[in-house]
Amino acid sequence: MEIKQRLTELKQELEPFGCKLVAVSKTKPNEFIQEAYDCDQKDFGENKVQELASKYESLPKDISWHMIGHLQRNKIKYIAPFVHLIHGVDSERLLVAINKEAKKNERVINCLLQIHIATESTKFGFSQSELNEFLNSDRLAELQNIHITGLMGMATNTSDLEQVKAEFNSLKGLSEEIKENYNFSNLDLQELSMGMSGDYKIALQAGSTMIRIGSTIFGARSYPTQ
Ligand SMILES: *Cc1c(COP(=O)(O)O)cnc(C)c1O
Image 1 (tube, protein in one colour):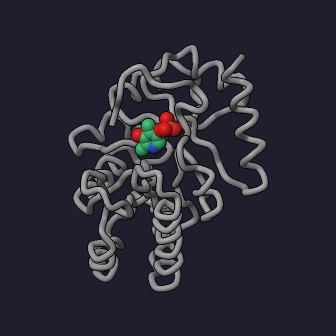
Image 2 (cartoon, rainbow, N blue to C red):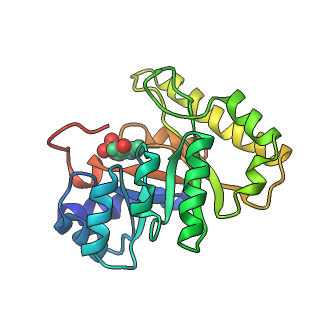
């Protein structure tokens, strides 16, 4: 009941922005996901491969599963057959490995490039110069089993809202710049995945198209996860 109410409120808030909601269900039981699903929520995010694969097995097959966590190359194979969108692609090596698994499964996998926008060095992501170097080469053209549909970024965990805003705006700016300067058949930057429970209102103002919300919908997690 609570889940339903929180979902409804969030969706109302997102509607004027045309922003999509990814319900982050990590650590939460299948019953919670089923409850959200019954309220017409079809996009769910998980950050652990094993948990994602086992939830996929036991829940309705028309759920779109988003991998939002740090992904190790040797684990791609477990989600490659079904994953809807991989948000945290933070290196060319990972992109190459995803392409290989996608090919084996005879499909194209949608990916978001994670960009390092925070000041914290613990967060993952391409730096702007790494990204430019990659896109200036022609190497992306060889990866025909991936489709880069946007960028993803996590802001610094700080109470300084101006800083968070500046970081989200920088991601938006980078996206515009890439769209203008690069032309690849498998690069089509439509999505900006930014904003979580603590900062999604700022992300919406900065042009987010996809927010990833966990605790606001499902309640606080009982143990911390990355
Ligand atoms: C856990 C997680 C979220 C959701 O966090 P909440 O604060 O619970 O909304 C969003 N994005 C990523 C990458 C996460 O790991």
